[in-house]
Length: 427
Image (cartoon, rainbow, N blue to C red; front, side, top):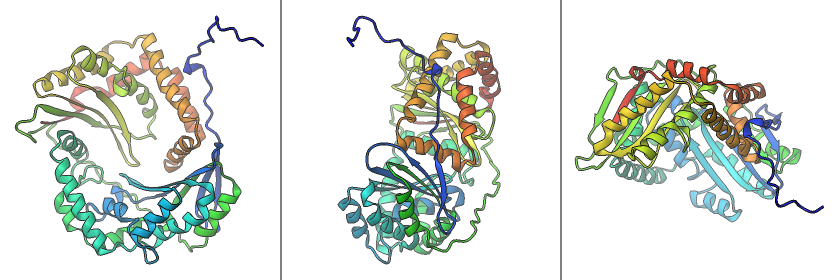
C-alpha cells in the first residue's frame, strides 16, 4: 500500500475520544494490608508507593512530619545511612519520601528483577528507623540554613503566608515551618511521630509496571508477615480560622524590585459537586499558558513572565488560589486585572471556540496521563485515597466534555466574588 502524502490525516478534537482508566487489581497480603497493583508497560521497571497518614494533619508537634520524612532513610538498627544509600545506588534504584498535608508517600523506582533485594531494605526503613542523633543534628542545621535562604525570597514567604491567612496559623494546613520549631523537636518527638504515623497497620501499597502475581507474592513475603492491628486513623474536624484582615502586605526586602502576589480562598475538596466543574473554569481562568490571566497580564500588559491559578484539594478542605510575581511598581495594577478577569467571567459567557480549546487542552493532557503505567497508578492512588471509584473518574470526564458556558458563568458568580478572597503581597 502506497501512502498518500498529499492528503493530511484527519484531525480529531480530544473531546471526541473515549477515556478509559485501565482497571487496577486489589489484593490483600496475608496480614490484611491492601495492595493495589496494575500490570502495564513493556519495560521491566516497577513503581511501588507506600502511603501513610503521616502528613501535617497528624502532627503533634510542629515540624516533625517534615523531619521524620527527611530522616527516614538515615539509619536503622540493621543499616547505616551510608549502607542504605549505597544499596539504592548499587541497584540503580531511587527511593523518595514525600511528606504532604495529609499523607507521606514513599516511592521506589527500580528494575523489577531487583525487588527481592530492595523490598527488605525498604521494610527495614519503614519498621525500624532509628533517627541517630548525629543525623538529626546535621538535618536540623541544614534545614535552618535552607529556611534562612528561602526566607529571603518573596515568593517563598508569600506561599507560606497565603495558607496561614486562609486556614489560620494554628490549623495543620495553615502552619508553616519556623526556625524555632526546627530547633525545638527532639529525637523522642521524631520517634513518637514515626511509630504512630508510619505504623504498617495504616499503610496502603500501590504497584505498577511490567508486573504480576509473582511481584505481589514477593511483597507478601516481606510485608505480609508482620502482625498488624485494626488501623485507628484520627480524622478530627479542626476548625478553619482565617484572618479577619483580607489584605496582608509584607516588606521582605526594602530594596526589592519584585513583588509576589497570592490571592486565595477556601474551596471544597474533590468530594464536592462543584470541584470537577471548577477544574474547567480554573483552566480557562488561569490554569494553562493560554488562559485569560496569562493573555491579559503577561501577553497584553507585560507585567509578569507567568501567572497561574490552581486548585489544591486536601482530605479535609482545599483552596483556590492565584499566584504570580510582578514588578514592584505594577502590583496594584496586576491585582486590578486579576479581579477584572474574575468579573468578566461572572458577567459574560465564554466564547464557544475558547471553551472548546480549554476542553481539548484539559482532556488532551488527561489522554497523555493515561498512556503510562506510573501516571495511571497516580490516578488510581488519588481515587483510592479519597474513597472514590471508577464511576467518579467517568463522571468527571463527562463533566469536562459537556459543561456549558452558562454553567461556568454560574460557577464564576458563586466563587469569583472579590470580597471572598484574601490577598498576600510580599516585596
